[in-house]
Image (tube, rainbow, N blue to C red; front, side):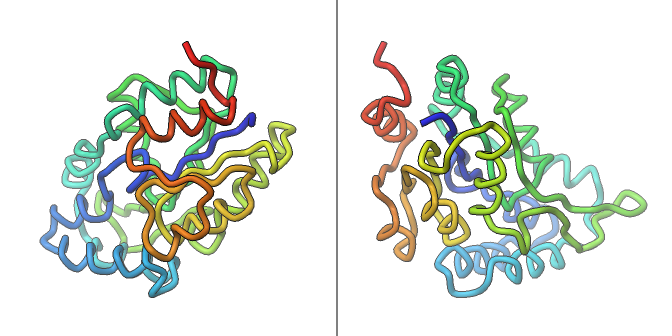
Amino acid sequence: MTVVAFDFDGTLSDSEMTVLLGNQCGVADEMAEITERSMNDEIEYAESLRRRAALLEGLDDDAVETAFAEVELREGAAALIESLNDAGVTTAILTGGFERGVEAALEREDVAVDHVVSNRLPMAEGRLTGEVEGPLIEGTKDTALEELATRVDAALEETVAVGDGANDLPMLRVAGLSIGFDPKPAVEPHCEVVVDSMAGVRDALLAEGVLDRE
């Protein structure tokens, strides 16, 4: 296995970016409900993301910055990414979440991945427009994983996908190894390995020879 691709919200991070943003303008409960329905495959992901972005219209940049400052990597995530990087494995984050939040969390832990594919919340005159843009709105994570594998000259059979929600299903289905991180009920049957911690992900990667035991 030469490529490991992670989902972000709910996987590498236990934060949910849209909910943190929603806290800044009093719509967190509505955000959480839409997110849960999407992760359980009850509504289309693109529709859920647009609904959540619309609720954020008018939020100013200071509040956005405050929300993204609360995005944190899950315990053990930074160390796992570092181990993969040291082993020469291509690391990636494929997320319908937002570039600024991912970057803030990685920078805080002083860790980096090789590739980030994510969405953005456009602003006008210092406020969110209520729109969302990026490759993972209508685009799906299987396509993103396939494109990444091609870019680094790896076969799909050499990739690992780690995710938890319905929008992760496309990449989990095509990856050489699918790891469900505390997956939603609709997702778990499609995962070859199910874990509930970053230590569990590490153990799965050790078992597959992606990482060497120290």
